Amino acid sequence: MEFTKKTPCKNCPYRKDAPLALWSINEFIDLLKNERSQFGAVYGCHKKDGCVCVGWLMNQDENRMPSIALRFMLSKQGVTRKYLDALKCKSERFKTIEEMIVANYPKLKSFIAKLKNNNNHGR
Image (cartoon, rainbow, N blue to C red; front, side, top):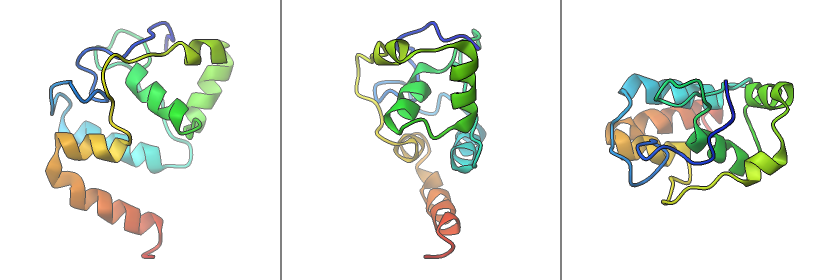
């Protein structure tokens, strides 16, 4: 996967001004499950051009890189803090993955709540 783009695509689902429901509902569910797994994942751009999804990468960076898979890839490819600091988005982005998912598919709000309860062991 390449780390060459510095801005999210105009229709990146992480942007609030992007068209909603661009991804299938299953892709959003997969994203949410992977974000909650211990190892995580690395997401490519939905344009399937071989580049990392910059919207996702910016979200990861803001959350201190919770994806272990991403940390390994950044290290392996020699991606520097300079590159990460150069990432910019011209529009407002969703603050959380959950917020993005509910904006795209409001019916997933109860699914997200169920996952949160399972991760907190019912607490």
